[in-house]
Amino acid sequence: TGAGKTTLFNAFTGLNEYSDGKPFATLSTKVRRVSIKGRPFLISDTIGFIDSLPELLLDAFYTTLGELLYSDLIILVLDISEELEEIKRKLEASLETLSRLSIPFNHLVLAANKIDLIDHEELSGRMKLLSKYGLDIVPISAAKKYGLDELGEKLIEKLPSYVSIRLSVPRNEKEVLEKLKSNCYVRDTFSFNGRIVLYVEGKKEWIDSFIKRNSFVKLA
Ligand SMILES: Nc1nc2c(ncn2[C@@H]2O[C@H](COP(=O)(O)OP(=O)(O)OP(=O)(O)O)[C@@H](O)[C@H]2O)c(=O)[nH]1
Ligand SMILES: [Mg+2]
Image (tube, rainbow, N blue to C red; front, side, top):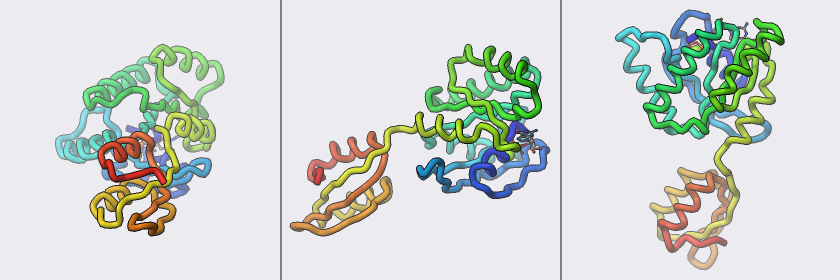
């Protein structure tokens, strides 16, 4: 808690969500559509999950963490201005929770936040010590909006492959058409020879397995 997740979320969305510095300022997950260097992203804010949780908050905690499972990428926000031991403790606790949820670490981007509160030497020392975790780390200040371009670039670089493709599906396969529409962004459609031709954008892995699962879907 208090690392700056909501502040970063706000910096990306240009909105002003509740953020008063008190623990657990964020309880419900907010999802927003944002554009990062022209790419569409859905970004969601979460609650913090390090400090011991009041009983009352446990449900909110698991609900919001469950959403991590469906995320392409996770930005783990650390307060880099804290004592190194504290940073490490929180990082390791976070990694432990994420691995319990079977989230692969290559889906993680570490945002080392609040660089405005420390000097260059402190920052490079801490970055060096954190590098042993083998994670992608981007130094930022969510409040001062430093490093957000670099963070955006890292996110795009790590995003699962996204492709544009033309597919055709028999017109009467309504269910399959619906499935395609709910999993991809459909830019254009037209009818041709009893088939619907769709120009879709989506995750390559999903589209590949969709074509495999439905033999009547063809590349067009
Ligand atoms: N100096 C400085 N303060 C920051 C920065 N980012 C966030 N803060 C401050 O840190 C405090 C906590 O920020 P939040 O964005 O609410 O943190 P959070 O991670 O969402 O906290 P929870 O929702 O409680 O888990 C607020 O007072 C912010 O203004 C930063 O880059 N620099
Ligand atoms: Mg918050």
